[in-house]
Amino acid sequence: MTVPFRRTRLVFQLLFLAASLAIIINGYSASSQPPDIRILWTNDTHGYLSPLYHREEGDDRFVERAKREGRVGGFAHIATIIKRQRAELQDRTLLLDSGDTWHGTVVPVRLGGTPVVELMNTLGYDAMVPGNVDFFYDQETLENLFSAAEFPVLMANFYDAEWGERAELSNVKPYIVRQFNGIKVGIVGMTYHWMSKVADHPQWSFGLRVAEVQDDIDHLRTSENVDLVILLSHMGWKADRRYAEMVNGIDVIVGAHTHDILYRPTTVYNEASGRDVLIVQCGSHGKLVGQLDLRIDERGVTAYEQTLFPVNTREVAPDPQIARTIEKLRAPYKAELERVIGETGTVLYRQGTWQSTADNLVTDALRARTLQDVVIKQPGRYGATILPGPITVEDVYNLVPAESRIFHMKFSGLQLRSMFEGAVDNVITEDALQQIGGYMWRFSGLELTVDLSKPYPNRIQKIIVDSKPIGDDTLYSLAEFDMFFRNSPEAVEVTETEKIGPREVIAYIEELGRVSAEPDRRITDQQGNRMTDHPHLRETWEATGQNEFDLNSSRVFKYEGRFDTSGRVVKRL
Image 1: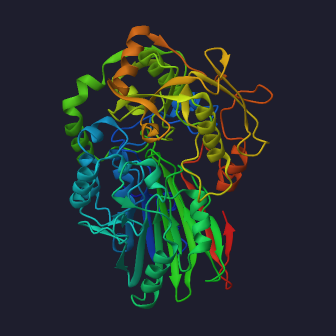
Image 2: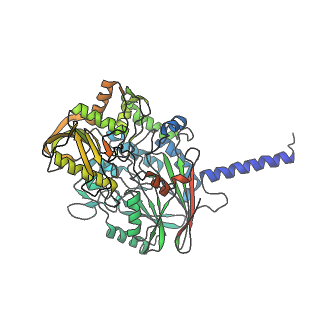
Image 3: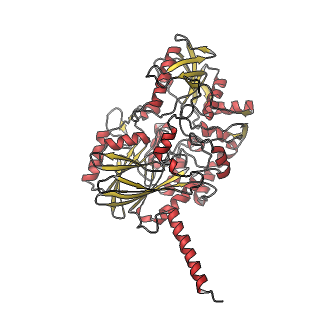
């Protein structure tokens, strides 16, 4: 049978169009040259081996979208994107991770983080920097993880606290040099600079180490003659912006910690180098895989194309090899974790600057189970979202992964006021390098009225405990979970209990059968409005480029830019 020429030509045109569209969606534009370097990266996956639901702060349409789009993330689905994108440019692709990776869900935590390292080894990561949550493990566990990684663990600000010198541990380095496609790349690691405030490791010190890191980069530029310097950072988006101004010679910062989705790479001008620095970050929990394609000449980066790939499990198939590994790792815990313990009538999420529904439930549960006046727990950003409906054991561990004991102690009312003034100040400080975390403590048993227009330490206008104004000299019982108030010299009657945080929450839900939680009046402003999300959230969406994309229909989020002859970025979508 002979096919008419016109039909044959149409078929070839359609095939060519489909192939071109596939290249544009998945990689570089067919009309342009391939990049000199491709950076693939993950950040803040928090040990989520399996897909999850995850609500971003301020997403009022989350439940509707979650029911339509399904779960996101999961290492098997992440692996599919990584393998596909690396295969396009095998000889010039770096695979990096910028931390909060080994800790955050119950299976990795019970197995000392090794499941995640095993998956990263299989996927062939080139380097990572650990985050603050990774340092929730004890010293022995951390050193085992460092050694087990078949890629370098980078931390230029990791020091021995006693001797003031860089800590010397197996496989831990301040930086590395790699050569791809004839281009030398220096990669420097910066872990969380406030680690000493959030993790219990007095044997090590951290900090910004500006002079030391500048020396490292000068060495990379002058002695190693690198063409590109990447800072692999777990300091947070706003801190990265400051650091890009302070340290000369950085081309790209691959960031983490604050879970920001930078739909548009942030650019910061460094006066000493006379060039813009690119900062990228791809959210958290494995919802996105980041890709940054770079064109480079003797001046440095000349053009870039960032693509953020949503890891939507209904569209991205799981990698069979990684899926089998995860299934094997989860098998011993499957029956326990999938047991239904109750149901929720409301969506339970952790992402909220001042309070969240999940943390309200958890702290209320711990106060009911401990019978203390006040409960305070750490306000981490990580944790899956639970849709209205059944609650499983694993759902609770996704909110409270550490099987840590609860401590009891007492503080005076005046001391509590001072502590909470400091917590509020930390949330709203404009000094990104001084901010620790950025979320308000999660608590139950108190009602705070706050006036953010007033200066520190006069923002807390009223504190109510047990329906009465707090008494300055009255001692109040307090239960803490995953905090360090017990180390305060002001704490009295400190007791370590036998109660394990997540187990108490599970028992509470089992006892009630049905639970619900909403943002409530535990923290309000001076007009009596409930405080929930960050007051400048919409400004953040504008600064990250979120407003430039349709989040409901975009298959990928792509942003291009080039550098002009003066070293400044000219942006274009």
